[in-house]
Image (cartoon, rainbow, N blue to C red):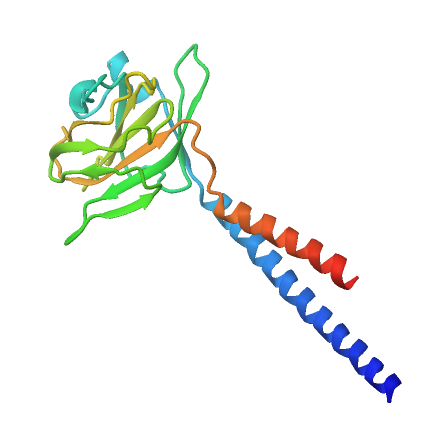
Amino acid sequence: MKQLVRFLRIEMQDVMKMRLLRIFAISVTLTVLLMIAGTATAVTITLDEAVQCSVGNAQTGIAIGDVTGNNTGANDCWGTKDGNDPGPGGAFDIVISGNPTMTFDFLSKWEDKDPNPIFEGANIGLSVSGGSSGTWSFNSGAVSGDFLIILKAASNPGYAAWLFNGNPANTSTSGDWLVAWGHDISHFSVYGTGVPEPGSLALLAAGLLGIGSILRKRFF
């Protein structure tokens, strides 16, 4: 009888091991697929002198002063460009002759929708009034470093970008905006330097590795 009980206990442990290993393998596979999907859909758009305001190449009448700040105004602007800005997971590269490339990662987005606006990205307290002009604001300290404000119009030409200095001593956290090319706003986005990569998948991967380690120590 004791041998039978021992045999059954070993068999149950083997079955449990196989089930846990199967679950672990499926979880790892799903995590890897999600990471690959996120990387595949990320878009980076280059802003260069071809549509730069400060060198006189702005299109459709936009100007640096179309987006203002409560402390310092915009340093420069680029646009207009057709289509959409990169959005969540995407980025802008600013290429200025004689200067290193500056990368700005997606941070937060306000989209004009009825009956209520839609928000995406980090919660920075972003607040925007709609129409063809209005006001913007976000929480003090929400942005560290230089940042871009993107105005996306409801029709083509699509959007333009304004660069703000992110010096902590005089970072603008509110101001006015104008879609100067004659359309109502579709959405308002903020891109920043030094924005950390989304951590949820990384945390999940770390957790799975920890579970795998526990399983190995306990059952093998």
